[in-house]
Length: 401
Image 1 (tube, rainbow, N blue to C red):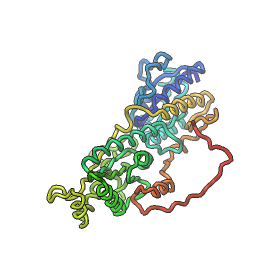
Image 2: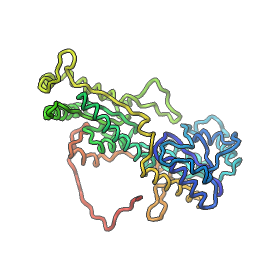
Image 3: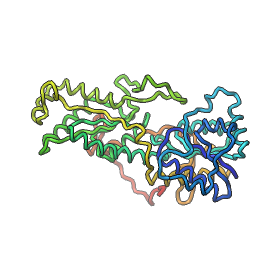
Image 4: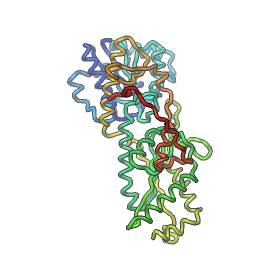
């Protein structure tokens, strides 16, 4: 394994430059050379037409800032299997032969991982460095910690304007059909309610929780100040059990419709209940907020930070993990191991699993949710009673740090 190509694919997030540097530096440490294949799988497919590739020499690696989110290598959403070219795999192999590349380090999520499985089955050596801010793989993935921290910061920032205007704020965040980022970001920032795809939302329960907590805060404030914050994952279903999608946007290469409007949907449900609740007028009068025809119910406002949660700077954990899995991916390739996902390095041992298993969807554990329901957080359901069993470990559990 003397020459490797490094690919970053799918959505951008924190820690990716760490993967690139980790793989390249480990290759250099073993006397090998590393090259960037730009623009993800699009670049891999078109590799045969390139005149040159950028080599990641020590001097070029110095120019890559590990702390910045996103990837210098670039991304694209391309499903190789869908390309209408019967020679597509041979074309990729010819591109790799042209630049004498022996194998690939590929950093991506479940969609990118499915392409890696396809490439491996067609004789292309590759190892997967797990990456997705959604944290929906079977292993920890680069980018999740960075995005969760940014979500928590946005919630804290939004509280200032929400309190000022006595608004109810709904923050909609990425995550597709899992709620890890909404769940962890919301918990970190003391959100009042968190709505995730794993738990169908009963809006009557959410409304009751919101009404009690919101007005209680205002009535107990010496300046009649208060807010209520809800974090919602983009992949929740509407009342008919259907995805809330942007119909104007076409599906991507992997067949995913763009999810959009979950936050607005939650606002509509709460506003409808506020207008129908005969007791709201008295509460608004009691709190000094009521103005007939102008300010009769609290305002429910939706905010969607979108790509702001995956850009900017990486967390220290994601950079460290990214460098580790990038380095480990090169070592696995050099040992003839392909078609696998790095799960981490523990006690000097590189842990890995079959990529086709690693990319299976990992949902939020709803028993974990019950812990926070006991602390007063609403998840749009009747709170589960904690079934907390204890277990003594003979030694400390394995961890990456």
